Structure formats: structure tokens, C-alpha cells
Amino acid sequence: MKESNNAVVLLSGGLDSATTAAVAIRDGFRVLALSVDYGQRHAGELDAARRVAGDLGVAQHVIVRVDLRAIGGSALTADIDVPRNEDPTADRIPVTYVPARNTLLLSLALGWAETLGAFDIFIGVNALDYSGYPDCRPEFIRSFEKLANVATKAGVTGGTFTIHAPLIDHSKADIIRLGTELGVNFAGTTSCYDPDASGAACGECDACQLRLRGFAEAGLPDPIAYAGR
Image 1 (spheres, one colour):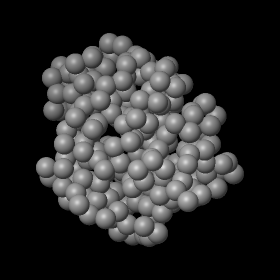
Image 2 (cartoon, rainbow, N blue to C red; image 1 turned 90 degrees about the vertical axis):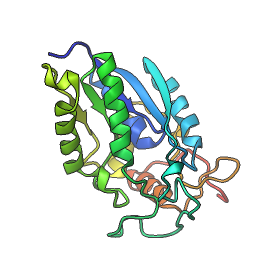
Image 3 (cartoon, rainbow, N blue to C red; image 1 turned 90 degrees about the horizontal axis):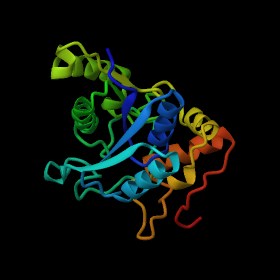
Image 4 (cartoon, rainbow, N blue to C red; image 1 turned 60 degrees about the vertical axis):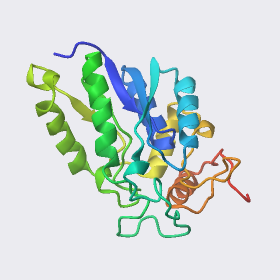
């Protein structure tokens, strides 16, 4: 039996997580947004998460710090160049993959949900337009949901956690269309892995390429600033 309509939503500040939060609100959940400062080089996404949380009027927004630079192993958390102008749909796992990131983020969301008496957790992963990350696949979401229900006090004493990934089978264009329908202010989001000092997106990293392609396919203008454009 679920005790409330609270839902914990992982909110990165990108267009996927913003749309996911809007979906949760549409579906009647009281959204509690969780962002994680993990030492990412594109830390401006935390400011974007604050903007998105404010725009959507979420019930609460918490930022947790877990510095993954101590582990490294990624262009987002170590002194490794972010690739530019590579095919973001190539069959490979890129250096922007952060080891076990979504496992860690969902674990934090699960811990907070358990303290809140909430059994619904939302994450904005999608398995169509993505950069080869293994922790964006449906099998990962299903496996984590099973874990959540055997690894927690709430799960073994009658509760049932659900991991919602409402964008899992959406293309980036689909996500942009859906977010637009739900009133998401994409001007407040960010996607770039390597923005310049002013915060302008590079337009060339995997995340930027997927975003730009998505807006083009959706037939909509991307409202954020890009360096040199």
C-alpha cells in the first residue's frame, strides 16, 4: 500500500529530466526533486536544475553532494577531454560515461524515497537517442526496481517501489515535443558536457549534438545559447 502520492524525481537540469518531472506532475504526483553534485565538470547543470524546479513548482528540491572525482574514470569527472564532433549514436561506450552513475543516483533517490514513505521514483533515461550508456537501458531499470524491493526495509515489509522511466522508448524529438506540450521551459535547461566560461553550450559534444538533432527533428528552435552561434 502506498502511503502518499509523493514521487522522487532525479533532476539533472537537462531537457530529459525536466520533461520527466513534468510527466510526474501531469500524472498527479507531488514531486520531490533530487539533484546530485557529483563533481561534474558541467556543474552549471545544477543551476539549471534549480531553474527547472522553480519553473515547474516542485514541492521540494534537494541537492546532494557525492564527489565522484575521487573515482574518476570519465571525461565528466577527471582530466579527460570531452570528445567533439563524434557520432553520438555510434556503437560504443564513450569517455563521458560516468562509472555506475545511474546506479548511484537511483540509490540516493531510493534512500530519500524510503525516508519519505514514497514508493515512486522517476528517472529520465531513454534508450533510443542516447550515447551508449549501459545504465540507460530498460534491463537496467528493471533490475534496479527488483533490487529496490529486496534491499530496503520498506520493500520487504509490504511496500512496492516502482522505478518510472517514462521516456525510455522516446527519441529526443519525442521528448522535446512532449515537454513542449507539458509547458517545460527548455530555455532554463542545459545539456552540454563542456560549456564555455559564460555557460554557452559547445554545440559539438555528444549531448549537444543529440539535443540539436532533437530540436531539428521536432521542428522547433532550441532556445539556449551556443558558443559561436
